[in-house]
Image 1 (cartoon, rainbow, N blue to C red):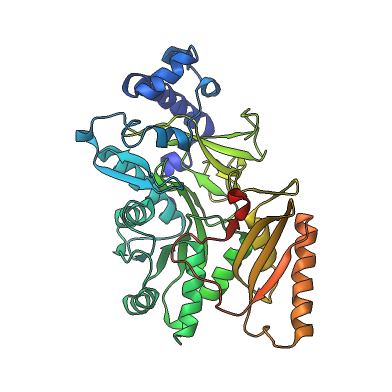
Image 2: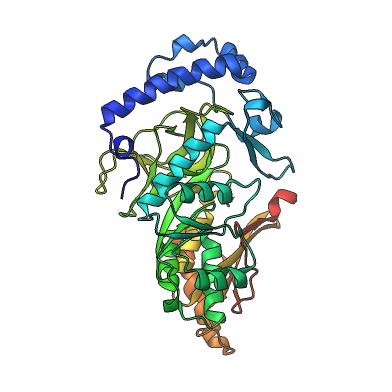
Length: 433
């Protein structure tokens, strides 16, 4: 199903015309309404009239999360507070959240984007959504809530946590669509089994999972354990929250709502633009935002873009699954390592649960990785030879994939702490040495 066929299936040339018009208006808008951008552009010798085509976007300055924190709380707002309907934000390592402001129009456009997402998953007014993303400053809960209501669906606003209650209400209320992080979906799947609830007694049929990187192997694990179709939903609070992108029924790429958020791929080192299909850092420019529009915001997410018509009929650009974040990338003895690579290996081996903790240390000036990973109950044993064989099996596969040795520590079932939100998978102690 398609929510807004006139946009989602628009001819590429017509879409580019709309994007060009909106980009020129947006540059003019921020130049006159956001002192931060006016100063940046003046330092580069740029005026709004210098942006005539989409290709001219490369002349514009980048925006980073540091810029948002340096202008905390409202320094990047383009409208007075009297026009701000809602404030969201995400906390960071400095303790200061990155703050985002929305006008009423921004909320309506965000809701439109979420409606496209949920419709692409096959959801209709007859569905019952269970929102297990956090409500509050985090954009996930309220974003999904408004989108589901907009398509006419019923919404259970549970937020995250309280898993037993989540599952009881899922059963009693007949939830058909679950919205949460993929790691929490797996946690709920295990809890359903522990509570002795027959999976077939649930009406759940689809899930919208995001807010953290996840792999195709993890998708298969969720789909098998919950007997649903698991769809990726992409977003980040600085751009709008969930709804920046979504998968369709083909599940072979994430469509981006590029009529509102113009995407680029750049080399994260040289900052030069990259072509279609090349992997690099994803950058977004707002085309319609009023409250706090951003130019060329560096997401740190590593992916690639593909243009052309999808089998579903949509012409919106497709993004590959996020490989990871450039700031999450670990450099171990000169080799780039992403947590998603490790997760993919774990989920490819039937003996292990998708729960792990990677710890990186520097001992005697040498980097070392320790992977603590849970063994499934049916494979966990007190026989040393069997456990040694399991350690060798996963260690050898990680060596082949990463080109590095990893110290393996096998953990008992259910011994690694679960998360109801974004899972904490990596501890890098080198940062504190």
